[in-house]
Amino acid sequence: MPLTPLDIHNKEFTKSFRGYDEDEVNEFLDQVIKDYEMVIREKKDLQEKFTQLEEKLGHFTNIEETLNKSILVAQETAEEVKGSATKESKLIIKEAEKNADRIINEALSKSRRISIEVEELKKQAKVFRTRLKMLVEAQLEMIKTDDWDELFSEEMSEELELIESKS
Image 1: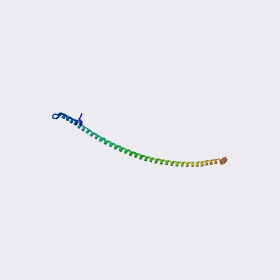
Image 2: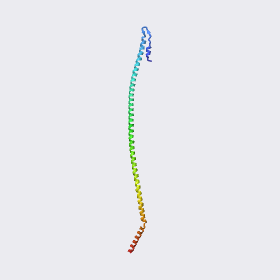
Image 3: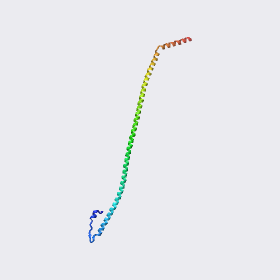
Image 4: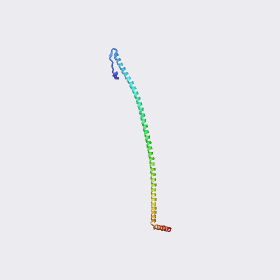
């Protein structure tokens, strides 16, 4: 287990004839050096990992910013498209309403003209019927008159006379 700063601080060397035991001090220093080198390596490795992670984080942050900008652009574009579609649909509806009104007005006008024509034709048919009826009645009256009988009897007499004169 590596030494902690407290271990180094609390380390007491036994006193010998000329001071500290040199072997013990050297052994401790070797341990400190070994642990310190290990800490430096770990620190270096951690710094490299930290740098790599910062680069990745920066990369992902850039991606996130780009995606956010793309989303905003897409939303703005969608709003523009939606607005354009709404305007276009309103224009189409107005045009359709105008066409519908025009067609309805034309149909009403045509219907009125046809209705007037039908009424005129009915009047003409009544007049024709009345005239035809009067004509037929007049013709029937002519047929019923005695003039026909006289005409037939005169014609017969004339024919008889002609026949007799030839004989």
